Image 1 (cartoon, rainbow, N blue to C red):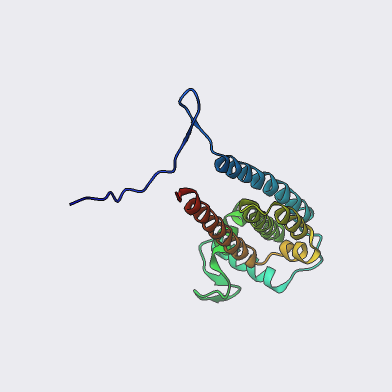
Image 2 (cartoon, helix red, strand yellow):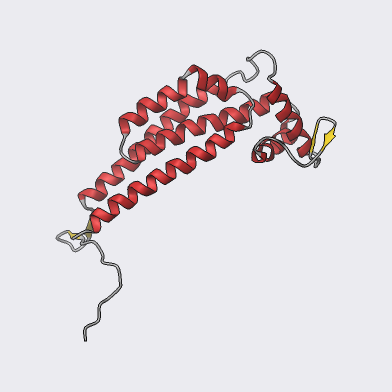
Length: 196
């Protein structure tokens, strides 16, 4: 009777003359892709922040949702789940944004600029994560062109500068999607590299 081992097979390693492990061409390419994705992401993030953060109060007037967000977050910063004069525990917006905005309002005061800066940072990080996801799977040209286009697109910049709660939601969704794509890409390349 023969027994078979259920231990996973290791991929063969290249050895140098001194006996040290040498990186395979596939590992070197993966390292270059990772470095390229980080550089592209940093450039796109800088452009997106420069487009979204200067003069947060330059947009004239308040949008109704911005006042709503400011009021709920301000009350939450003081331990009260309240919207204007109404006291209730349900808010028709993603509650995580209020939890992030409330400490900033407590620290810096009740100002619409704080809400808009938070939304602008979330919007810029969303753009950077989309570019990182594309660069991470080897689509460098798409990461650069798409990242820069999204970083400076007038509608995306204008919407990203407004103090809406959806900026944080888009950040979480884009981070989830980028990591899912990277995971699938890594699993796909690992399966092929371990094949005999």
